[in-house]
Length: 218
Image 1 (cartoon, one colour):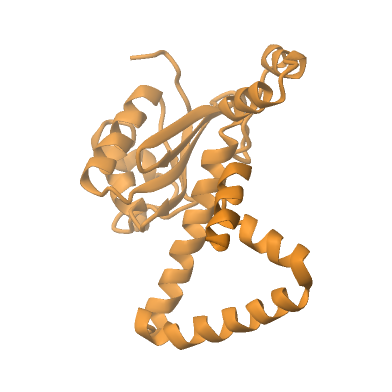
Image 2 (tube, rainbow, N blue to C red):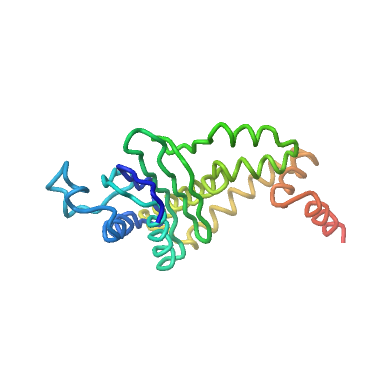
């Protein structure tokens, strides 16, 4: 158990909608008690925590929070979330970003923006290799996993709207065909440069793109 202690914890977002269960498990693990969680609103005791709600507690252990995230991931392989702790005296808290199969955590400010200390920033800036520098920056800020979670949350929101409207996958077939038929016509009218750009978007690198073009020749 580490000795990092914080004054507040915020569930920023969850995908799928498991914020209530996450809050309950954090409370059950000893991080949050009903008295702490609802001391500003006694009438809210029956309401589950929602994304963005600040759950007040003291003596939060970051390793324990990670254990709770792992438990929820074991229950639901789709589980993904962002959780932010806030320092008691205004010092940086810890941002947890969890996606299926991976988790990133690091210091953050109250806006849940990762904080990179001066020594780490200087070391990254001094790295001459572009690819190594990018890996170090990603390790320090969690940029890729944060972007992946934002994309997953966006997809979850679209799914929720489709469910609300009552749209099934089969209902979308004709619409998707119409949209992409129009797009294909626009790309083809744009000539070879536009065609190459579109085809390259689905390739992981130049070798894959080269293989794709060779397959078109065969």
